[in-house]
Length: 271
Ligand code: FAD
Image (cartoon, rainbow, N blue to C red; front, side):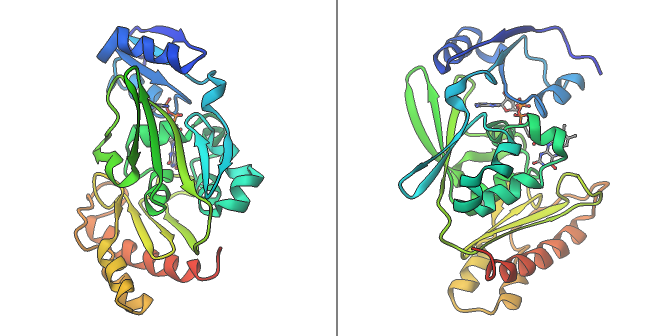
């Protein structure tokens, strides 16, 4: 449970972070809240030689309104999203989802950028961001690009970020649709056994495959006028849930259908 030796580098601007990534390449890892990376390092599943701490970069943190969007800086902490009056008013789904991440200690350290860059399908925020078609702004020394949530998550702990890129911010729509986030856990504060986010007629699932995924069969059925109860039965179509100590694959499929039905119904009452 002791990490391999590493050098710690604290940077104060995005440029300094990009320079460090360019200099150390695959040997470097960005450190935000450390609540996913440090445990991995303790288990020696990650052994970066250089940790580049971006948590002090002020330009990466905070929430602002831009037209029809809310722009959330990558190092904005879960607790900030949970309590921000702006997020609560304009994007209830994001504030509520953040409030269900781990426990208060986790929410006070963990960041939205770290959560999505970690790329775990059982994480909460990626599921809601996928349902909202969030846009991710990333920067390297050669420029800036925007990645749609649907193209960001590539596989187990794998995202579209390259080793020399920093996630800068995440753009979500100001809420105009009904929403819901349903999370089933075995213990009161835990990773999702299965989760479902609903935003209007968009439905996303967590922990039903290696990556968070859209429940496209449900979305198509709704678009064709199916009743909620009928559409929700399709929630596990094209999913590949695992069987593990939390649940069997069959039980996860069952949960996906139940949570999707509950989420779709609740979304009619939450705006
Ligand atoms: P870090 O651990 O610092 O980094 C994670 C990864 O992202 C690293 O690879 C890092 O290099 C990369 N990274 C970070 N920031 C950037 C950036 N701006 N650009 C590019 N790459 C970046 N999460 C849930 O969703 N639900 C839970 O119920 C939950 N429970 C938890 C319980 C415990 C006890 C713990 C320790 C964690 C839990 N988490 C849970 C995880 C938590 O949400 C983490 O905070 C989050 O997954 C990672 O955010 P971080 O800021 O800590 O990232």
